[in-house]
Structure formats: C-alpha cells, structure tokens
Image (cartoon, rainbow, N blue to C red; front, side):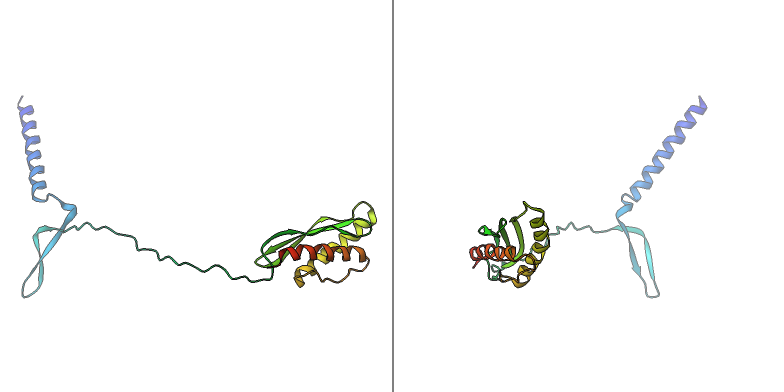
Length: 169
C-alpha cells in the first residue's frame, strides 16, 4: 500500500511540474527573446516575448490586357483551299487543289491526274513534284513545262490558274 501511495504522489508531482513548466513557457514556437541593452554590451533577457504575427492577404497583380489589331494581309491570296477546274492532259484530266496560308500558296494537291496507263503513271509521278515545287516557289501558275510531260504541264497550269483566280484577294 505504501508503494502505491508513493507512486501516485510521484506521478502527481511530475504532473504539477509539467504544468508549471508549460505555464511559464506557454507558446515556445512563437517566442522571440527580448534584448536588454546596457551600456557595456547587449544581453538577452531570460523572459521571452511573443512575436507579433500579422495576417496578410496576397492579391495577385492584375494582368494587363493587350488588344492587338487584326493581322495585315501578307500575300495576294485569301487563306483557304481552292479547287481548280479539271483540265485535259490528252490521256486524262488533271485537277488540283491550291492550299493558301497567310496569303501565300502553301501547297498544291493533285486531286486527279492521268493514271490509267503505266506510261502516264510514270510520267506524272516524275512531273508532279517538279510542277508543285515550282508553283509554290513562284507563287503562281506560270511554271515551266516539264520535259516529257508537256500535256500534263499545260493542264496543271490551267487547273492551278483557275484555283488561284478563286483565291485572289
């Protein structure tokens, strides 16, 4: 029984000690020492002072709005896709689609070309990339005739000219 009373006394004493320590230092996390100034040197006081916490609201800076004028036309054509008329190339027809971007001829797509005979396929497979490249480079339908593909070159110029006339600004 004596051991029991002694153990309760020790626990109660320890509890009072913990409470006494916490009352003296109630908010250790927010304490800042207060300096005491003397004529010889600066000493810290033993009693801490609570730091001041000021709540602030951080507002975002307004983003300036810049209204840009509509872009000026840079080329001679209206943007879009324009399909030219079908033109006779003797062994078949050629029809192209002109793709205009930023006022410039950006691409030429062959929609139809003579391909029912092996010779026509071979000739046009060689001529079409040359005609397309030259049309994009010159930005019009005035392309040179590809040797060996005279009829296809003429039909290409005709179909592309009708497509570009639709795209004129």
